[in-house]
Length: 328
Image 1 (spheres, rainbow, N blue to C red):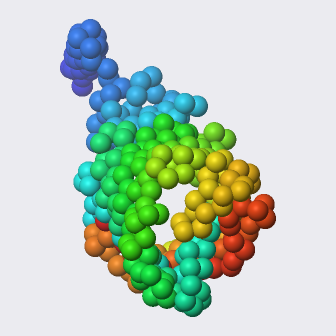
Image 2: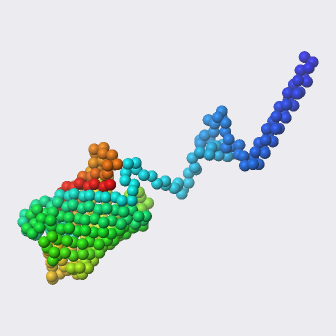
Image 3: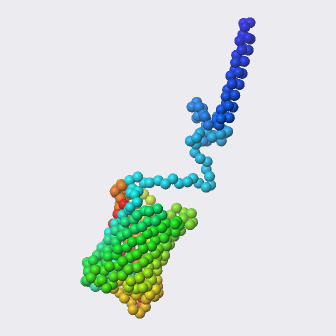
């Protein structure tokens, strides 16, 4: 019993020496860039979490979530699995309409039975080259009741688009070829400006997507065609259905010839309007088709076309039909 105070005194001295050595080692490591707050043992890791990290002098982990900021975090581009992510994309459209109406003129009014169906086929290839997207394609219309040629029109075209969000610029060239009516063949250059008005107002999607389209016929007409349009898409979530009402109005200037219809007296003024709705059904969603096979859509269109100025070439006609679209 007489030796116990001596043992206790040595024990106290050993604890003091050990504590001092640990404090010195911690200061030495801190001087080398060591931050004790970044090194949490597995025994007390649960005590340090994003919820109470503010109680500690330093970050609790190198994997901690970054603090919130009014500037937001940069978006990381992602690719949808199974979708064509290459630089070349194709699109095929097959439409079956009761009238072929183009720029306000009913091409079905050439004779025969005007209510016969028109098969419209369009194919296009897009090339993604940085901010530019060149494209080339061909449109054709097959009208069985045409008294001259059931292959009524071929329209090869090419152009490119440039996305300068919120503005998209597109320009190209159209060649109009009419089998067995070569005297009416012509060509034009055209341009289009489209505004992403949703982006201007800080929204994720466009509101009306206003656009202005103009074309100059440098072959037959030596005249101008202008068109202003708006459109809005209403997607119905989880159904694959999108309802897209749209409207446009056209003005022509020294533009006399519309297909085989030629107006020799008046060729300038407000020509026609279109008010329509396009309904798109995604077969990928409706039938659970993987997008690695491409995007398949059924379409339904209903349009009211009306003449504005009576002396100009245009028609009052209600038309529409069904179509199939494929993109890859």
